Length: 77
Image (tube, rainbow, N blue to C red):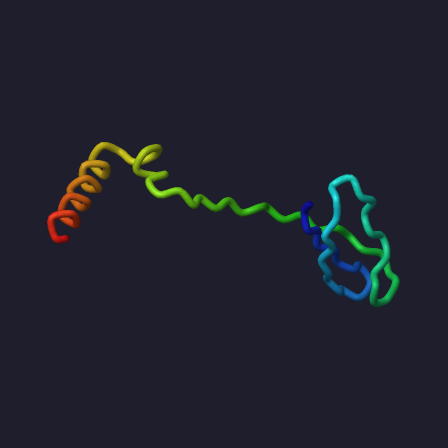
């Protein structure tokens, strides 16, 4: 379930509400009972996999540099 951010058009109070996507929008400010507007935010993307860039988006030069640096690390152990 997403967390929605609302802002009151009357007093400017901002608050978050954890709601289902199908839930009705909140229409009343909990502070002043004024009209609220739901704000839209882009979601962030987090890549947690090792090697994501070395396997998908690197060019040949950077791939060979990665191999060389890994070999050097292994030799130093």
